[in-house]
Length: 215
Image 1 (cartoon, helix red, strand yellow):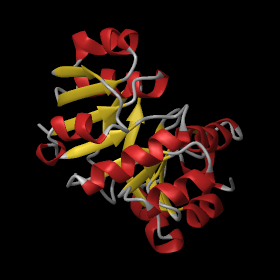
Image 2: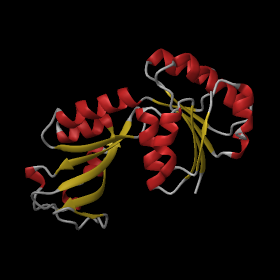
Image 3: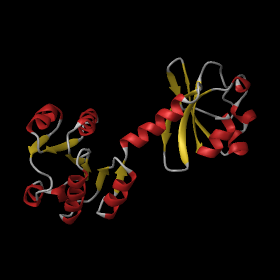
């Protein structure tokens, strides 16, 4: 279990709080609006109403005690920037900040953010890739070059074994798992036969996956 300070409880911050609750994490939630704090209070360990740009208030939270500080403020970039810088000045171990524009991301990194999340851009990329092809079912970007795709087993692969296809050697792609009838199997060997009407989880570079599956 990690100790997490979550600052900003708008739509994005609220969804983060709910997911952290599902993951049974120890969360302190902060927002300057009482209504937002009240909405997440049943789902977090503790919550405070306050201005995260106020040094004395942030100091009172004991930011050094949290494993991760998430700045989820999206409606006021100046506040997000000030909060990020203040957290680092007060000794925060690891700060993740939300960006809404490329220029915001650059300034947040310069002012102390260890990592940036870019919900709108990341979701836009996922949506474009997911719905631009009928045989892509999911997509997770690992970094700028590598990704995991859930993709339909190509008709030409059906009935062949992983060893016969040899996509690792041909395309430098790893077949991680096979999903059939809603059941996910990670027991993949060179003797695994590719079934029809199933999907694969594959890992590789974007270029390799696009070439292999003609995306």
